[in-house]
Amino acid sequence: MFEQCLTPEQIHDLYDYSVKMKTHIITYLDGEIISETDSEYIDIEKDITGLLHNKVSDFKAAVTKPAVKCILLAEPTYLKEVEKDLKLAMPHLSVAMSKPFFLEVAQNGIDKAASLKLLANKLNIHQSEIIAVGNAGNDLTMIEYAGLGVWVDNVMPELRDKADLIVASNNDDGVAEVVQRYILNDFVHEKTN
Image (cartoon, rainbow, N blue to C red; front, top):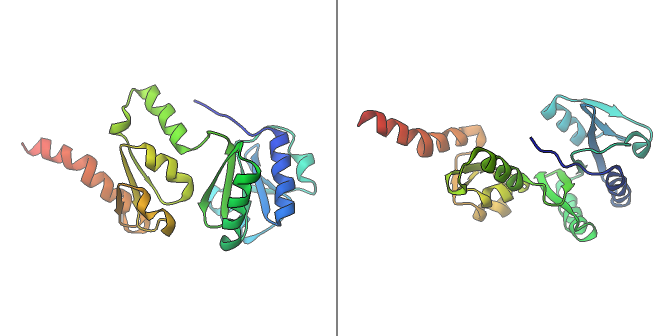
């Protein structure tokens, strides 16, 4: 429905920044994860996405077309410092933590709230009718945009106060709790009356 990619030049700038900051960097091209390095964090992304990892000898030479996003990967405490620095160094990009060791970078204005708003407008759904559930920094804009913003209990600690509600963790059926309490409950109530 909609796609706004980073340009190859922006990706190359992010690569240079990553080298300077001593982080790993990946992007996605042709259904593969592209990087110059191996890391336990890249292995996690491979497991999450199921994508093949194409380890290349020259990242910039391999990335010659636009890509949806890049991820900088590093030890969590250090990556929080990188996040602060990158937001200052490249304010023209959208920067958010998706996991403690994943720092996602996309075009400015491209985030989950923007995507949710686009979909809601297309489906003629009012903002107040939207429930969003998340657990990480890259979910924050969506949580703030939705009529009901919900964190699961395993949300990053610094985000806990930025939602309307906290439910059980995703490992303990937190999303099911939201569906039961705020969606099915009305349906069940209507059917019994």
